[in-house]
Image 1 (cartoon, one colour):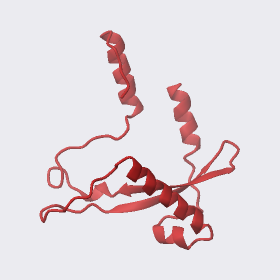
Image 2 (image 1 turned 30 degrees about the vertical axis):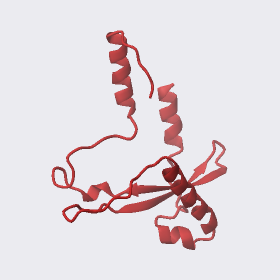
Image 3 (image 1 turned 180 degrees about the horizontal axis):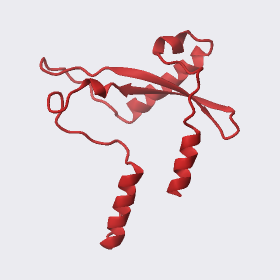
Image 4 (image 1 turned 90 degrees about the vertical axis):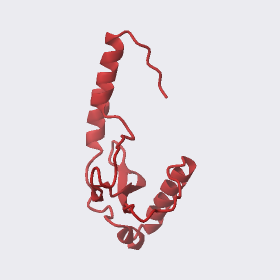
Length: 130
């Protein structure tokens, strides 16, 4: 099941040259209304899930920029399924032990899942999903 998902995901990672690479391109192209709707959908999703807290930036903190990433999603028959926009942080601008001390993963990689499952089976543990 895990391998099937990985193969399925790889086929959908094709790069479309027509996808905008910047916010200005997205709002000035012929299908800008669809990209703007995708942006609104992403912002509403982040608000609904309380993704961020608005805080005062202290003087010794470095601001992390962000960028919009745009992608058209296609079904298995290569028909256009939807327009997707994601707001991503430019974390590469930070330096370890200067700008941050801790890191965390939003999603787990398949390797971590497999190791966790192996430990659960080996030690006869119960696994609860959160």
